[in-house]
Image 1 (tube, rainbow, N blue to C red):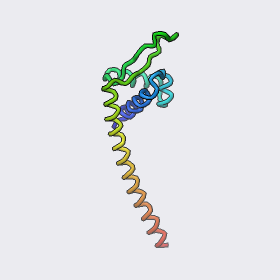
Image 2: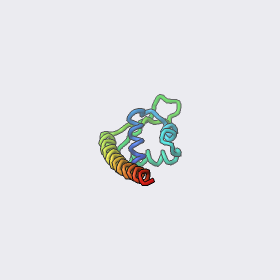
Image 3: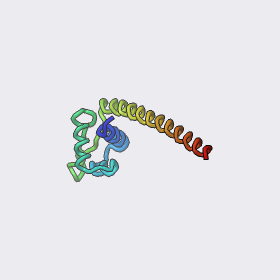
Image 4: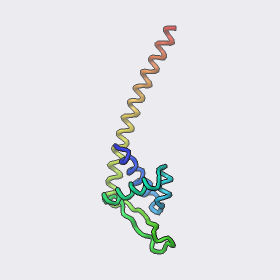
Length: 112
């Protein structure tokens, strides 16, 4: 999974929970610049994973609510599965490394 896919997954999760966040608030949650957030949002909009809805009654007519499309919900599930599989593999590799290190410590300790 690329860093863009990780960012897309994070955006899809956040938007699913809080669709009324502004891009600025979303950027703060993601820990990236507003420009990067705008780029990522437009990418998701172009892929049809998000749709933007304008707040008609808002004082700031540029404010949008971002909503997951059915395609976006499916992508969120797919990205989550891929992310989970990668994290599980990392966990297993880390567990194996820890076991090797424990054995090294034990062997070194017993030798001295």
